[in-house]
Length: 248
Ligand code: SAH
Ligand code: DHB
Ligand code: MG
Image (tube, rainbow, N blue to C red; front, side, top):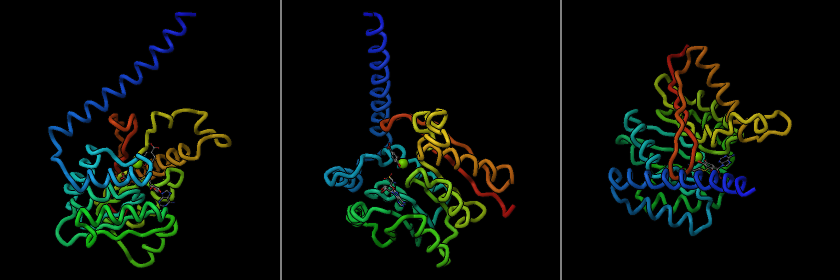
């Protein structure tokens, strides 16, 4: 009995010490490689103060998004899921001269915080924030002739990732990079109970359907893709990277 207790507590404490280590290493990386940034820090502080969920990308992940956007030479970026605008600020700062970013957010209260954070970062001229469920605003954008975008960051509600991926393809051109956040979820994408068609978790089922759709496009030769598992201050998750190929 003592054994059972100590082994179960040691397994949970080793899990939390692993998380502490991931967080500490994220801190070490950021301390060495990410310059202090008042607008980003203020965006986090005001988001926390306003009670927004603490689910933005981490600083190191924000920097990765920024580097990808710069490597794309992006002049047009589309983001799904603004929250308080933290990832928006990282991405908008990567825009080539004359570039613009459109970000979609369903929750008006979050959008209001994001607007203030984006304005404080001096980016309001470059960023258009559209409030509404993305499955409504995406077809509107498409009908207006928006795009094709150079980079699309999918980070809104996971159950709708399949629809977001399809709209993203319609708003792409050969060379567009589509990045999907949260495509590993602690490995839960492999839990049969999580993807059970009747009783499973809609988020996990959405992410798995996203892989199926992306995989079908890979088969068609229309995209080239991978996903990278990540650990860090936000735990164990991953990013999908989908590069749109020629018309196919
Ligand atoms: N990209 C942000 C985090 C986004 S969190 C960052 O890294 O800083 C996911 C966001 O998607 C939340 O703000 C949530 O309100 C929004 N969201 C949820 N459902 C949505 C929908 N149907 N359409 C658009 N946004 C949605
Ligand atoms: C969570 C994390 C995210 O990056 C996100 O976009 C949505 C939710 C989460 O940890 O719950
Ligand atoms: Mg996310």
